[in-house]
Image 1 (cartoon, rainbow, N blue to C red):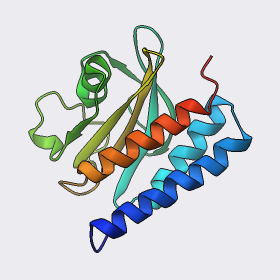
Image 2: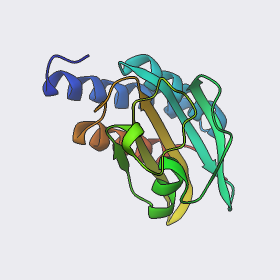
Image 3: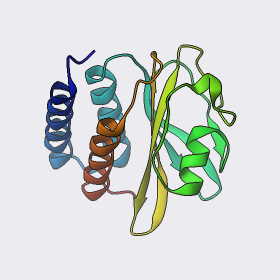
Image 4: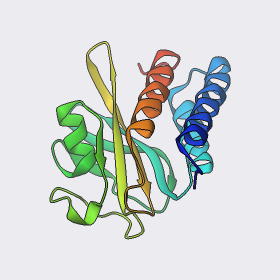
Length: 159
């Protein structure tokens, strides 16, 4: 865990730089999503799932991720991922056991943050992170993960 907010922010700044270096030379969607999920899972303490769900026009479908076997399809509005995608906004759930719309894929997950992936007004998917601790995410995570997603979308071919 981080000692303070400054250390957490510094970790995220490094993550954003590392991702920029990775995607600068590669523009393939699957390759970049796979590497970025590995980068997040490795760098963020207490992570039990770091991955992407891609929008196929009807529902979210599991994409590249790091973690245990997970839910493969999520309907719009269902679970934290479907709720975030439908609202097109980042959602932070501090305790998943108390979130009425939570879908349990891994009992080790205790908190969650989901960041929507929207480019040119089009929903492409969501970044989903689960933590093994309650209150695992806050406004610092949101700020930097939203930057992380924007950079990924700007330098990756999603066609």
